Length: 130
Image (cartoon, rainbow, N blue to C red; front, side, top):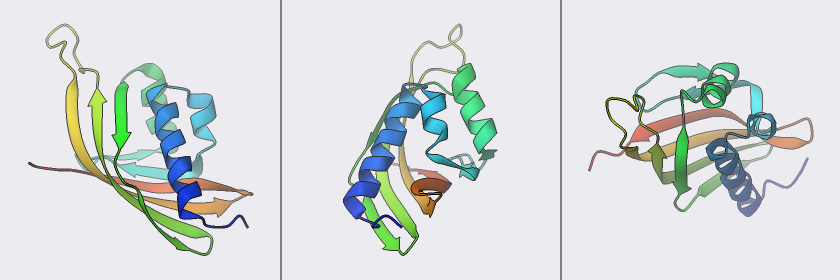
């Protein structure tokens, strides 16, 4: 197993976010376990396939996703990451409203070391109400 180095895991998470913003789904898919599940800030569960297909099709269009300080708790072949982020999404309806949607969120992610690499298994987003 690779060392559960907090700096390494934070770099992996930042790379995953960059690939999602770039909509580089082929490369992003390798960062997500086959049984990956996202719980969105609105409480909607999305599987790996459902989530990545929404990004590929443009239904989810990340314009920017800036993670703040990423705190990592490592436990052998598992690690939990938590960080605040600012996310900018393209408007869902460009005809009615062309302005982007800005969200401030807390993210909690579970990574596991599988098949020789760290992969995200679960992700939970919670909107910060300021």
